[in-house]
Length: 141
Image (cartoon, rainbow, N blue to C red):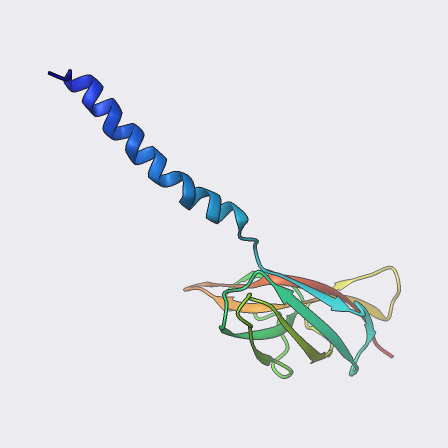
């Protein structure tokens, strides 16, 4: 007859082994990331955004904002210029994006530049954030 402690240990070991493939699969997934080329642009021009690591075959909304995280009722994002894209089967996308001048963007050393971010806009009950944001340096006249 098997000791109850040994039986529990065998059951626990069997359960732990079923978790290994799940943990391995999750380790292979990457967090969403967007790259902008060029990343230094003049206001009212276009940049190319390439995203990866997003859920596959999903429609997302990209917005330009002055910060990557904020608390409502703050709104550091442009009201116009949002763009909707659909990711491919691998969670990637590529699109042109019209660059504006984000509100509340951080100033740079140059008086006519501002740091802005473009990412997937996600809102919570009392927060807003950008997922996978690309950093832009926007120059204005």
